Image 1 (cartoon, rainbow over the protein chains, first blue to last red):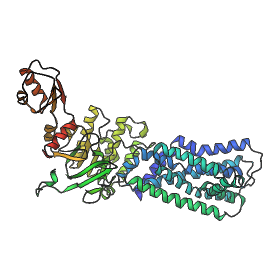
Image 2: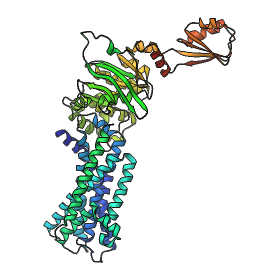
Image 3: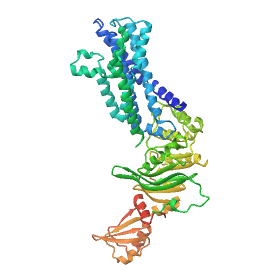
Image 4: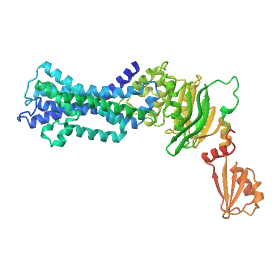
Length: 244
Length: 311
């Protein structure tokens, strides 16, 4: 247990002091929010939470998937195999990736919400402190299935392929997940797909907090099914990675 | 084929800490390790010698539990390899293993040593691998040689009973190779066991006190290095178009083992090409089309098999 924490701490240090990672995971969603806010400031929000919730969900997808390329690289370059010659439990390496990905998702979501609170002018609802904390905290928890998807990608594909698959997953979760276009405004088939994606679940969590209504059960089911499903597949992929 | 394991073991011989018992591992059509039986005793420095593609890396992976045998059993410290690894009794340097980007040298050593029950200190490990100057540097900013030393440091940091090194000096020049082995032998003198894979006969000869030769996944020889070296060096073939000597005379030249004729060319295989050529030129100064070929290590190893395995 202590050993796993040592590994986690090194993994966290190593990623948190990488400037490019910081800019991409924390700066990118915030910048997208500010640009959208500046170009499209006066139009009324189509949903509770409007652009803030949409871009916070983008931040969740962006950080949540980050375990993918990182694991893919370490599989390809042999570091995971080197670790397997030490007493570290192999699963600790994967767990560390998940925890560190989540550690970026929280501030990434919070930063978007904070900037929206300071500069946003189309959110429709002014959030109180408690509501703001609930929004950030619950959207962060809803990032879990996306982290599981990232881990699955990293364990299924090595190296370059993991990067490609992560980009593809990012685009699908972003464009089809109802982050900008609500599923109700998509063609029927695409709308039906959107309703089943975890990124849409993250958006729904944000909207329900901002709009002050209960989260639809369907969103909870989608988030739970993705967490369990992607998690179980990742565990299977892991078994294939560790025994040759 | 007879191996060390088949010989009656004297009562004073320590029990093996690592054993391969009839181990076979296939990858698709290729049999990477073929019915390998082998025991490694505590305190030995064993070279696993063989040409590229001989199955050395697979043997190392089987020993470390990174691969599972299709047939046979691998034991490490009396149990499954994974248990010995989990107990921190093994340190390994894999071929071309990468390092995680962004980690600093001392941090990485600190992490790995913390995983073992009785590790070296970070300072000792840094000193042993000559990394004191770059302790605070991130691994992606190291030179190739420095990175190699970091990988050695990670294998040593846990102060393991068994050190397993797969082609550890492959990327190093001659000087760096010598220094590398000086460092390892400094560590080994404390009575630890080392198994290293190499395709360099001279390296096995210089470093090991026992050489296990494999090719095509099979055990070819298992002996002290001087015996293996004597078997594996010096052989070659001499081919010539014409020399005016009768075949009988060629067969009597020093070192010659056989003479073959093929499309007008004579091919002599010899255990000592220098002596054979010298004698040949004395007896037949007008040799035409002379070609001398030194046996590659692979041929030398094949010769070892023809002799029946154990020299």
